Amino acid sequence: MNLIIRLLLNALAVFILANVLNGVHVDGYTGAIIVAVVLSILNLLVKPILVILTLPITIVTLGLFLLVINACIILLADKLVDGFSVSSFWTAILFSILLSILQSLLQSFLKDDKK
Image 1: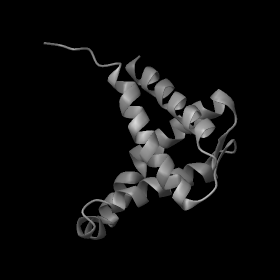
Image 2: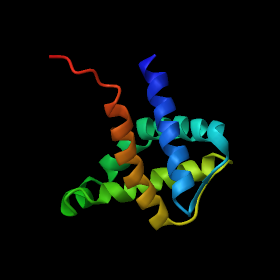
Image 3: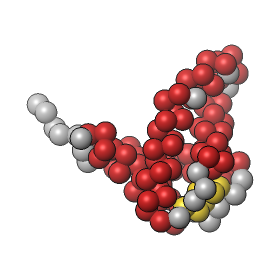
């Protein structure tokens, strides 16, 4: 149940950012759900491989190259999902940064204060 709620919150974050950013377009909330699922699958399967392959440049750039990897994952999702489009690489980097911030804000509401 927690996984479904996280996917719906991620879809909400994608939908909000698509309406705020000029270079990002998503077709409705169902398209945002599909994008959230595809991004989750790509982050689970493709991102670890890219991180391992680009480890030397990630170390040299002190981790900033991970922004490029995140942008590549978003551009790959753009190619895989028909109702989702990102206009440029720089828009994908901005989208990935804002998506990470918005996801952490939305998912912080799910955490219970267990003391």
